[in-house]
Image (cartoon, helix red, strand yellow):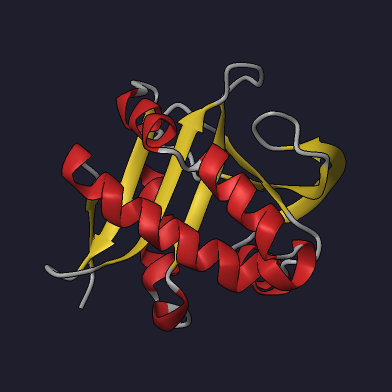
Length: 167
């Protein structure tokens, strides 16, 4: 049984391992293992994860069963868009997918930003399981981007949005 809680610095090594495993399971077939390793090293470096943890206008959550981090989520208020929270990361370890872990992390993230009216995210158009998850949770496509991610990776993405319930 996983419990969703705020991440701490002591979780970052396990989170990084989870991200590596999940990224390879998801994206090796799309981009190749070498490109995935390169992106993971850059985007999920200890310094990058620490910076996310320190961001005051964000929420960094993990799903923890006392031994294992089974999933993680990270969202932050947008610096460009008014009343919009950006869902930057929502990943569940391959062996814990389809067990409600992602749903539970997502449900918690939805409640963490009382001033937000919209949640927005970018997802790889070839990541069909993620697209299905987000659409099942009320997201709709509002645009496309060709140069997504940190360092402008050149990876194409779909931009999805969902209205949030106002308090």
